[in-house]
Image (cartoon, rainbow, N blue to C red; front, side, top):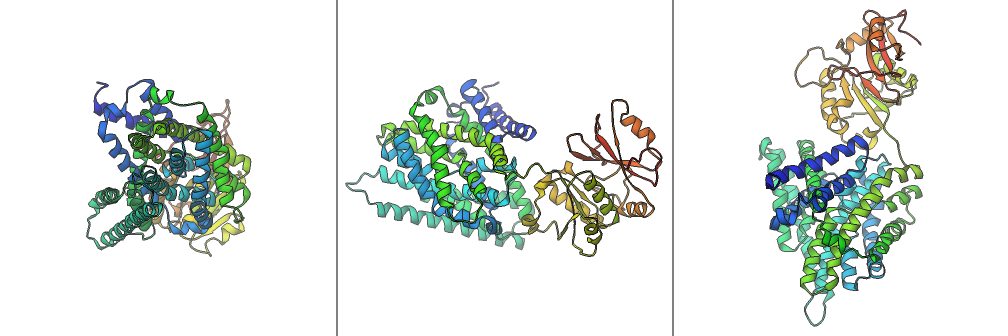
Length: 594
């Protein structure tokens, strides 16, 4: 049964998604866990051997997966983000690519002992970082937006640039004429790149013109978009190898900056698909390692890896960002973070084969080197990123705040009590008048529409562990939870009970399902908040028995600082040393402690 290709496809999915889930649960870098899973399934146990199992399908599967991943990355590149990272990104592309190429080539020649031709190719490919590794890493970090935007843009923009550099260098070193015409090669690659970019722009504008006009039904929009991405990639790749990466990236950027009514839903579909593809491709690529490739690793490659980590990347970034307004701590962090991923392995594996056919004996060293670079950078940067961010003082820490949407007497009172317990609380509302009481209570306020895309730049959802929608508009509360649920997680949010219960709602706060009007009346009648600490002698059942009539638990303050709300979908199980936050009538005789 284990030899069945269907079983192996299922196993690839289980290992990839399982590694992502384990990374989420443990806080470890997902890319490192996926790499370990692929190595265990491949060279260690021999269950998955891509060359044997997939054969000639392996290369097109990986290339198409990379195309979709880069398109999804392009969809996240909104020009609005460049107000934070525009100048650093431009310098890392315009200055960083040639500097990184030159330094990488020197490291490959003097450190790894490769010939100039092979070193030029390796140095060109290693200017990439890539969204397949940067994205999962940034999910586990909370660093300033300028830093994350710079790393994200650099990774996505430099991926096709590195691929095109490799194409040009391959054309140069394998040129069979009596003299190499560098100008002609550059013109050919440049023309193909420009044409690929035009195809990407045309496809992006076509999609954003067709979809809002109802020319494609809703149920076909995601399939049409996926097929268009693949077709655009293949068309450009037929014109010139690897230029398809430019097409899909540009297409994604165009769509990101010409939003359409269903763009959020399409982006969610593409993001889910990209997670699946990243997981699968990483398992496949790491499983392609065999003992022959591992044994081809030479001791001098260690010097090259050290130069890559501690000389090439730091010098590239620090020289590129010299004289910019970016603080030195942020520059140093970016100078350390440069994991390589799918694009580096795929391109070097393909071009190593072509160079070997052209008679370059040292080309075989590119395969073990590419896997060594990916493994070392993933583990070095993935496991150290959080520690480095903390040491540099740019780690924003785990989000412990609470976001309350809707300003009224009850939310102000609840927010003030949570702040008294040590939680950062932000109350958001569109009305300056409604926020006055919250400001008087010295709470952080946000005046604006939380669902507006512009707020993504002004309100960092990563700083909040919980969201409570408690405005006087029940439909709006449900919309807030539905819209922000995919970003924060539905288990981290709740809404006050609507006046008329219906389907498709978010988790409802409080066991009594009190509406905002009910809560407002209770506050006007003198109700308040209290807390009770549980001990080994006084458990949750004892707390329930002593709760005054009408009072009920609203949240659990965990001993470690976490906060869980009592909702109809979530019944927290308090433990010893946890504190129960209660909403109780005036002057309860025993439960009230403050």
